[in-house]
Amino acid sequence: MTIYVDPPAWPGHGRMWSHLVSDASYDELHLFAEALSVPRRAFERDHYDLPAHRYADAVAAGAVEVSSREVVRLLWGAGLRRRKGSGSGTTGSP
Image (cartoon, rainbow, N blue to C red):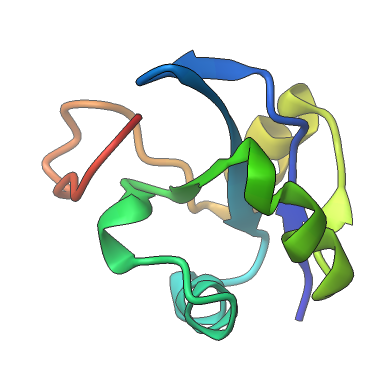
């Protein structure tokens, strides 16, 4: 199981955000997020939005640090990328 996180470089709601993704399945991503006590409402289409103050927690729990570009590449390569408006449902976003 490998989970990836990009640097907190995305502004929203007065803070910076990272993206937490899996290159294997949404199930493993949800399990990892649950273990970190990241609320399910932070899941958006194909990733979790993670506030900057939780970045170190994700890395300490085993998430691999990658660039934002690499996050997208990993999602496409795994067939897990969901674009906005894909009808897959959105449950929160910064």
